[in-house]
Amino acid sequence: MLRIGIVGGTGYTGAELLRLLARHPQALLTVITSRSEAGLPVAGMFPHLRGQLDLCFTEPDPGTLAECDLVFFATPNGTAMRAVPDLLERGVRVIDLAADFRLKDPALWEQWYGMPHACPELLSEAVYGLPELNRAAVRDARLIANPGCYPTAVTLGLLPLVASGAVDPSWLIADAKSGVSGAGRKAETGLLMAEMGESFKAYAVKGHRHAPEITQNLAQFAGAQVGLTFVPHLVPMIRGIEATLYARLVDPAIDLDSLFADRYAGEPFIDLMPGGHPDTRSVRGANVCRISVSRQESMPGVVVVQSVIDNLVKGAAGQAVQNMNLMFGFDETTGLEALALLP
Image (tube, rainbow, N blue to C red):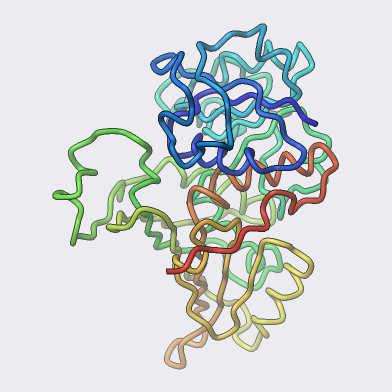
């Protein structure tokens, strides 16, 4: 059994990690930290875990965390990078669900996250934990940078097109929408039901910090400069991301369904829907990215990809558990077999 620690277990991502790991046959949760809730039983904050988890939140303690085989960081950006070097030195493997190790360029990190990086020497070692891109590297990694939710949906939707050279990489558009849980578990006026209910808006139109992450992913395969227009939107639902993606085809005669089927053959958490219209409720609670690819008769040179995920599962905690399974030699689907919730 793996001894598991979670740093920052009180947010939505932490709660989702707890839900998944509490029933994982190879995981033993040994410590869950929270400075503000130390001493509170976990099931007291999250009653859905009653009878499943007999732990209390504790203050972060490096010695206790060092006794774990694996530590997940479900913390705000900028937290993990201050603790990770010591854990790695003690032989603990780490999966960071924040953005601390996603960008390889420390100057780019500082530009988008507003602080200098505390351990830039680890950026080159950290493996970007999107298994569909880096499965072999994930298996051998000490440190995993778990992808962002938008980058997961957008990268998986565009990857087959960019990697095959089927589209012009300088003209990519990602029109993405997320439920409010993507903003985290916090009290903020713009997230109140009376503010965002029955409404729909774009945000961060001038630039979102997930854009350089997506561009970095696609640039691995493009063989040329990537030009991405990425605009996120907030929709009045709790979970889910839908990304409608547009690209210009180099050869309009290409068989798009075959292209995607070949790229994702054997991928356990990619579901292709030829000619379909995937919706967010079809992946709610499941570690699945559901994708459909098509084009319009009036614009046969433009490909339209629809990509949906649950932002808390395949976009965060589920993907982290998928990475854990790979790192420790378990079947990749272990603990992630749950079907989506409907309705």
